[in-house]
Amino acid sequence: MNGRRSGHAAFLSFEGLGGGTVGVDEFLGELERLPLDAVLGCLGLLSHTLVRAGANAFRPEVQGHYVNLALVDDWPTPLRDAAKRYIPGRTPLAWNGSPLVHEQNLALVAHSALLRSDPQPMTNELVSSLQSRVCRLLLVASDLIPSSPKPNLNSLTERRSFVLDWLRHAQFNLFFEAFGVTMLKMARQRIIMLKVLPKYFDVESTFSNACGVSLQRYFDIATMFVMHIPQWNHDGSQWLAKATLASKLEAHLDEVEQIFGRWIRTPEQYRSAWADWNRQAAGGSISAFDFVLLRQTPLIEARSGELVCPVFPFLVAKFADEPYFLLSEHLPDPTEFHEAVGRAYEEYAHGLVSRIAAGDKSGAWQCEKTVRDRRHGELADSYLQKGDLGLCFEHKGGRPSTQFLIGGDGRRVLGPDQAILQAIESGQRVSPREGKQQDNGFLTRGTWQQSIGGPKLPDWVDREFGHRPQKIVPLITHLSQIRVDDVCRSGYMVPLIEAARLYDDPVWLAHPQWLHVSDLETLGALADEGRLDLEGLIREKATHYPDVRFDIFLFERFDGGAVDSRLVEEARLMMKGAGATFWPAEFQRIGGF
Image (cartoon, rainbow, N blue to C red):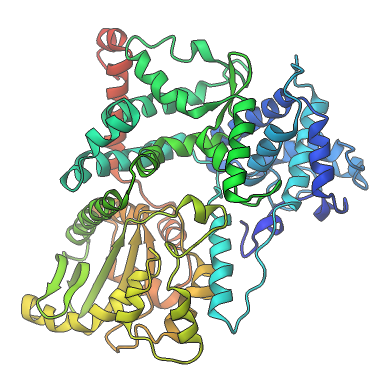
């Protein structure tokens, strides 16, 4: 997405450059004419280049080359004045800053090609004309991604639907994730799943039963792959020989193949799986979000014995997320597992809050975990206070389901249920307790909980700390990668809060702020470095920049932010462990990394 635009409006597109409308049938018909290995090969080479570019993937010097390739192609018709817009070796005049190549159109072209392109002919060379045609297909594909409709400003139901679609678009990366970021995500997952979650759930034996390898070995294997991917096409080839993938490993080849084999499909297997999926999900030939199968198996054996990855971000995303989704799918009823993950995340998040409280450069905060009152129950997952200001945290470990991500039910992301929304819209007063009972959205449930517990906090604090807060700031943290931005807040969150009269008690300083767990880690890193004045920062954010996404606010406020040294150390240990596991003789010879 770009600014407040979603769907094709956010991207450079064929119609946007004056090329006219191309229908779905025409798009699919062109793919039927092309060899599958050529399309997937071009996408693999392109997406790997952008993944290696990381946060620079949308810069002119990277995107401009592919825009030029798309400009010079003539399907289905030449673009007007294309020759004047095309500037060899320079940024094309047609480029307006919107990306041509992004995760969603890569996935759409790859998925459609797997279903429609001819798998039989083998392409000897990815000549420039093929690359241009694939870039033109990406240009057209952006026009086939629907934009979310403008919300009805008088209806909470329509606002919720609009924001749910906005969040579905947001599942696709704004930036192509650098491998260092992937390692930090894996480090976080390893800490939560191996060091915290076992207190609440027997994750090791369950994972071994589901996967055939231990969870520890899984992280070793995932780390080994992340270390290997930057060199994937070091010889200029987008293909990887399946037989040689693990050939240089000195040990545990069978376990690597056990994990790795789950991520591969042939085109025939992909088409068969799609037919089964389509019968169950009643999908269509073009979908804005439905790339479940490509996410499940991002490696395609389009040539016998040779693999290609057409959408590298899908492969990279699997490394950190695979254990959670594998267990969710393996267990007959994953409820206990999901609840345990929630408790584990709450413990992990509170550990970060404690570090932040202790490391504030203007003095430590009083800190309490799981604030409870005999009469009213739980009042906060974490609570900080210094002077007259309190910070009330709710920590949410929920994640969006596959059904939500492909356009289905969003109640686990944004609540409350429809009956409560209709009651609020009709002017009825819904109590926070009733709202909480009917809201399972990990982004909204905390608003009802805080509205119940927050007004009781001053009395509890007065009894326990001996100093009553004058104002409290509500903060909701979440483990899910989905971010709450200005569109989410102004489109639904704040209107819901105001219509339901939440946070009406005068103790609240402002409406809530939503923080991804990485924002907490950044705050912890800033505290460790002695750069954090938490009270000043939170007051500034809540009162002057309430709608700015929290990570963007931190990045701008601290000129790039900070990286959690504990995650860096965990990632270093993971790489060292992978070296000792898969290359023990070499590791011993060189004395480690």
